[in-house]
Length: 130
Image 1 (cartoon, rainbow, N blue to C red):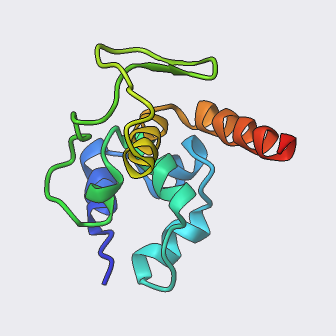
Image 2: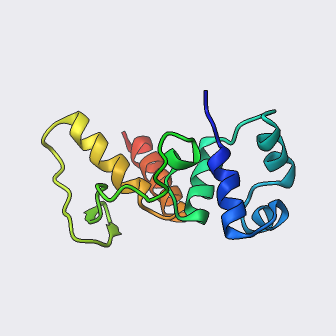
Image 3: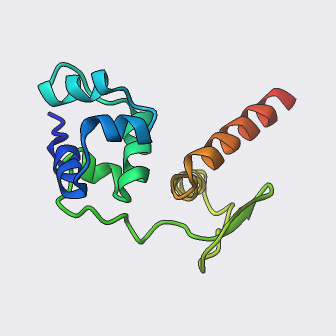
């Protein structure tokens, strides 16, 4: 069972209202209210937006960890088809399909939402070329 109590802890710690959270993000006050009552759960996109807003991991919002810090083991640097991610680790594409996918997912997760959307759009364009 998913537990998003950490989301409401963060709202309290940050000292904001649910209305302020809705204003600052693309989440409606109705959705936040429904989540608190357990009527519905946030989508993956909403969880990602909230994690970015609070500077924590999605795992923390889902109650899968008590550590709100974002995992430092993710890919920080690379240049895949013109997408540059700043940091000090390089990406080595090609060792195995599973490793490639893992590295790409980790790299994309570190990007801000707008850049992640650009990656998805770019991948869609590549798929259309085939």
